[in-house]
Image (cartoon, rainbow, N blue to C red; front, top):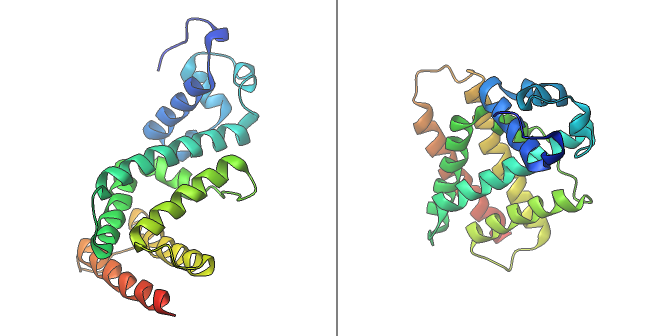
Length: 195
């Protein structure tokens, strides 16, 4: 990424972008203050002026990754009015993002967002907005929304995790299995909405 002109000109955004570059090159194990400082050509204490150590760095990076993911997801689902088509496109967008950015995806999905944290709450709210858009319904209650979010995330993230780990070894195409799973998920979601 290159050394900033002066350590004093370093911004939190510079640090986050350097961390993302490290993850893209080396995987999620590269997410750490010392590795990012080396990437920037600075001493680690300069990062502590902007972020609270490795925990602060990880949180800032995760929030940035979510913003990238939401942007990608929005582009892939834009203008879709049919709930089944939205689920198919959203599921494929998530899988494609994981394939394009495997390290970023793992960092994002292994971070526990806390609803009481204001920054995490914004991410959770945006995720809920996508689910409400997919459901094309404002009349579902919060319990239904949470159940649908958990079920959908478990299915899609679980499939991607197994696929990235090389554990889907049977001869059937994983693309075909993924589409079947999304179709079955849609049926299950419709069932939940009616109850």
